[in-house]
Image (cartoon, rainbow, N blue to C red; front, side, top):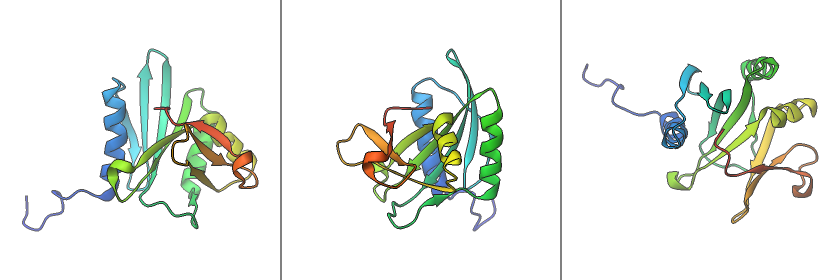
Length: 155
């Protein structure tokens, strides 16, 4: 290794994607990375319950004034995955400065389709302390109209 090389250093994304992989592998679900970069990772899985694709994105710090938007490549890719017969899940790592307080939410194909039908190019997901579900804000942004997403989904 050359002196001063960055190969020994981790990128911030490595911590978040690595945490998702660790959680899945701990549950005996072994992925195959099919495409990835700093902004997102895409994995394919074969399980006894069927095959599925997991599209993972992360946000390193919560920010109530900024929403995560899909870039045009993400939108195109997600729309193509929705057309496929294989189940699609979108894993969202909600990062926190205290890494062990970061959370992982999973949207299913139907959740993503609902966002696209509502013509959303960004989304907001949150969870209040002690709630058993995340809330995905699809329509008017009020908590009462938010779609509940179970917090125990892995994929």
